[in-house]
Image 1: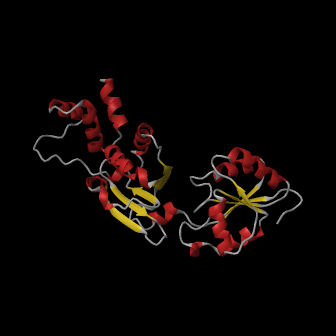
Image 2 (image 1 turned 135 degrees about the vertical axis):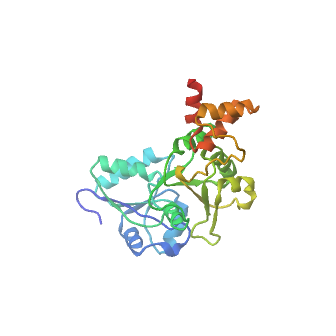
Image 3 (image 1 turned 45 degrees about the vertical axis):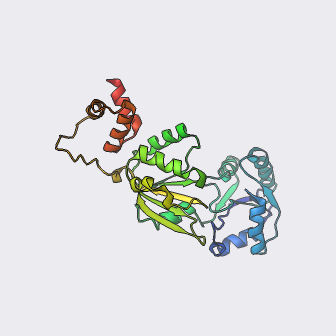
Length: 284
């Protein structure tokens, strides 16, 4: 496939669990390119062996993308064609392949994307949540403070929210989601396309009350209803609902609830972020 000018960068999706999801075109392209840039060469090597593909592998991942990215660009400029693959799913989605694409565009190198597997979209179509409008956020920040800020930023998004998460952080993340986003519909998709694929369809309130209903192993996709799905606050008393953030917070403070907790509760009640309530209250 090499020519005398510039090569082509192919973005080749790979199965996210079931090898039968590999497309004929993907197999053909991997057989025809000069080399394959892989996030984990050992992982990709297993895939190539299964389809009897024998091509040089270039280790390209988050920690060496600067050095190897330049090397891959040199190969492309020499006329070689390179396939970029992720460990699973779409390259460049929560993946260092995105940097490779940017470099190629800057150098006028042709880029050919192939359609294929993506865990977030695969989970979305089985979720029962809104598929007309949705936003993919990838992985949330690992640190609690930064994660809270990220959740507050997405609190006003309409349509389905789509995220990836690691099993060892999932309990903490779900608790933060309920605290910041309020009680919304959620689908926890585990091991999509794999043997132990499961979909837990519930709401954040019920989920955080019993976090042990989840098996914390494997790969997770979280799908959460947008801000228009937040359950409205139901005051069982006959008192009138406060008409402003300030009044709502003050009413809770008067009951002996700490101001910080009052702001959190009011944010959930109105279906907004804590930051929005805080900014209004602190201006008074």
